[in-house]
Amino acid sequence: MTKGENTCPRLLSNSQINVASTGAIQLEIDHSKIGVAERANRTMADNISAMLFEAKLPPSLWGEALTAQIHVWNCLPTSTLKGMTLHEAWFKRKPDVSHLRVWGCLAHVFFIQKDKHCSLQPHMDQCVFVGYPRKFYNLSTKKEVYHL
Image (cartoon, rainbow, N blue to C red; front, side, top):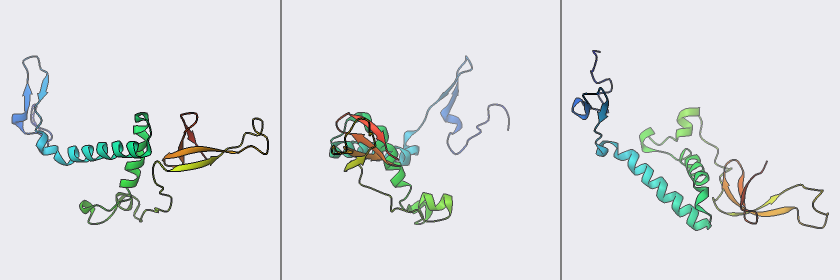
């Protein structure tokens, strides 16, 4: 390859690369060529918005919603891989989906704090399931709880 030759011909054509007189490279990107990624991002954003709205959770939990959504997407078959899942393509075995739960469902999380509770008081907090593995959002304290 010679200097200035396009090193990634599939993504950029020579007409899309402009070298300014200062030597800075300016890229003109045609967004129609990245339509699949744009659609996936839009779908994820729509799904996260729906997940947060349906569970009545604050927007600050969007990262947990995104992580949970990607975890589930990796267990779904895709036409690109001829019906295989991403997990199956990577690990050469079908994913175990028995651990999947409804995101945003109500959960009672058991905790052990013998110094703060007597034996007749409840040993559970009412939480909402927000991610894998076993992440919960405590409704009374408004904090995330990681349960083992």
